[in-house]
Image (tube, rainbow, N blue to C red):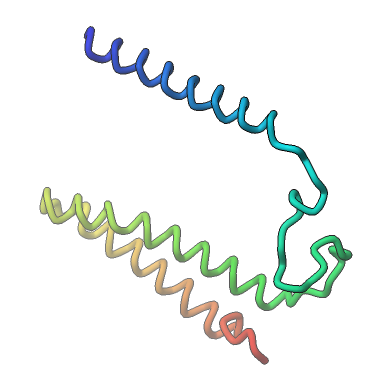
Length: 117
């Protein structure tokens, strides 16, 4: 119990110290508009934000994020099924995989994955 307390206090002291040091360094730096703006390889970073954006590309990015999160959820499921060899877990994993593949097939048939056209 004392190890947890010492570790917690030490972590709090170190993180507070790092925060205090970074605050002291920040206050010494002279803030300049040119130094605080991002460099965009010759492009004007302060231009209008109302640029046209492809909705199909946005849809593809959202689909990627959804399937990426689902794949991340599949890894622990397969690991737990491998360790326990439970039949219910295996069927649940296969059902989740079938739903995932069904969603991918639906997006493919709708044409959402063809963002160049």
